Image (cartoon, rainbow, N blue to C red; front, side):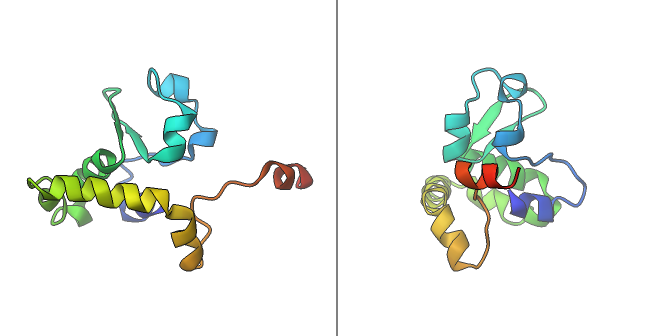
Length: 116
């Protein structure tokens, strides 16, 4: 999500953690379980796109990604993007830690109650 906010200079997207979103209002059938496993985009038309499809949707609309998104739509590369996305999503916490970041982390319940 951080990469979208950084590249979205025209503020085309509203990025928010799913824990803070009213999922029922955003899209029919959108669940916290799905949002916990993949990045989800809800389009202005109410369509829900997740995973590699969400990355392609976002990339198509960001000027700095204009060079990359056509490649993501090519036969063969489409499935590679989906597989690559799934690998990153499954390993996001360890990748984030290795990069010295705290992306994709949520305070544990006991830690959240200590700050109140």
